[in-house]
Image (cartoon, rainbow, N blue to C red; front, side, top):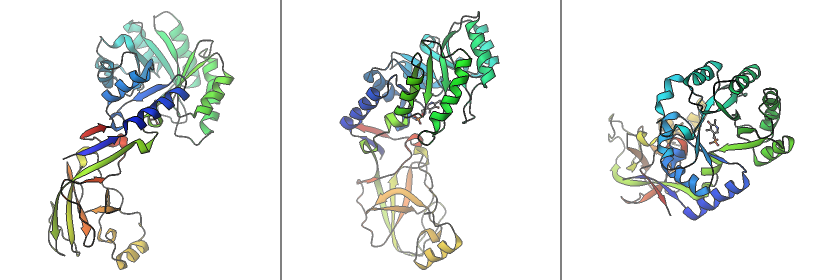
Length: 353
Ligand SMILES: *Cc1c(COP(=O)(O)O)cnc(C)c1O
């Protein structure tokens, strides 16, 4: 009774190794649902890859990673006093803290635990980060008394088109230089830059160590290494007009209600009704007898070669699909392919071959 993530182990590991070899200074990103694989598995794989540092999203994620990965752990969400207690003191020496506000830097200096900090410069993302001026003040604070140890500057770029982010980083690097954060031996942590972009930066700033933080390209970069299936749990023939579902709805069609694993608890959600949104498209779909014209939404489950419609919105752990008559109905226990967003899906199991 499962939504299963299948991993072609050899293929996946070959891809991971290729990325690790090509991406000098790689910092694997392990956050959220662990890109579908789970944080624990990615922590162990990071050790296997031989990296010295990984990144997690939040302080609350440190514990699960720290017990499985022996190196340093960069926390990507900037430090806030209200989250400070989430990190076990036993793990704290291995944690690198991101800071993006002067008041937080002052609070950390007051704590006096001599931790390592990276200073984030705001990018066109406008999520977190210092202004150019703020970065200079922050760098001055860290280099003053207070005992904080500088672990570099950090930039988080949008999912820019090839080349766009390089231009932005080059501009922001002038702020990093002005803050004294590009001295020989300095580290600049970056995201969403191609291998070529990072190489170009490294050539421009040979004294600086650029470290790419990578999640998606690493863990999900070879989509053919992963696939997702759901079990067929049940099926029931329905006549046109026969009621089904939580709300006793009916359809003017004969077919089969197919019950498959995977519901809202797994992150299976309603997709947009097939995209033919205009009134005219709906009318033409209606004349063709399309199920979207009946108000059904297309599901991510593929049966008999096609993405099928939800008979009603997904339930917590299962979904009811409508198969029009004529479609070949799979047996109970068969597995059917599902298209998911890996970062938003909780799998019942991950099977690595
Ligand atoms: C999530 C995240 C990354 C990794 O993003 P991917 O697109 O998965 O590679 C890098 N840096 C920061 C700050 C992030 O939040």
